Image 1 (cartoon, rainbow, N blue to C red):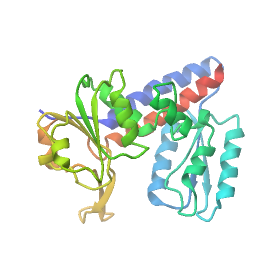
Image 2: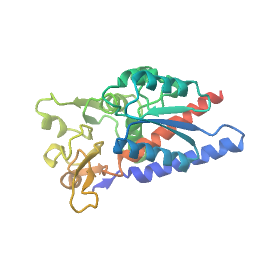
Image 3: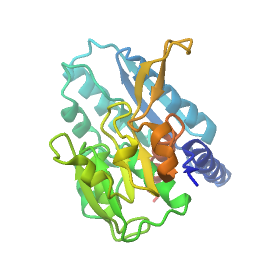
Image 4: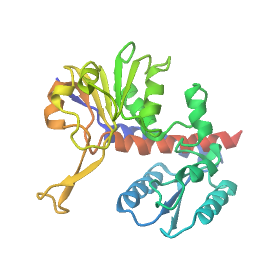
Length: 293
């Protein structure tokens, strides 16, 4: 029987735990965690994502600050914004919402963020520590997936995990985390990408399949073995005349055909997305706690 990996319900449980920690901190006279977000331009998806993060801060009792800048902002001006947030002692962690406008060098901006405030886990220092299995801020989406797997009690020991996608934000860190000598972890990991030959041969052997390639309904039933755990990271907008907006969100997995073959599967929406935000909240709390010492 297929079971749904409910990211929404799991994220609410995490938020409830965080709320209790925040209240305990306040009762002891300690600082309320504070997350800032830098939003550049008027990309509707980015505005929605940042809005969800601000609302999550409110639910768990964090302070939040939104730094809204126009698309026309220059590289040097945006670097100054990052530097101001680095120096602001009241802010425990901050994110720069991606994607940035084409004229901005994303990597230079991300590298300007202090690693101790990099709650997105994108700075090379945090990425390097993750690769070496040292304490660090993990990227929020892979961190959320690992939490979802752990809280569902899914056994990963010795399993074959296949990752579709090799991005530095999802695919690569997922491979690192799933192969760690940890629980969850200890998987044998295969990373597939746009140049992988005989893709179905790889995916059809996966005990755990993570789809993160950004192509709607790419993963079909013939690519999945019976009993697999399928994690759909994709967020794609496709036309749907039955919706008021004329479109709907869907994942990289053809849910209707794939779900009957799975032991567990994440829906889109309501799967990985809420867990990403919950993980960002967890990282922010840890950034705040580290400053207590």
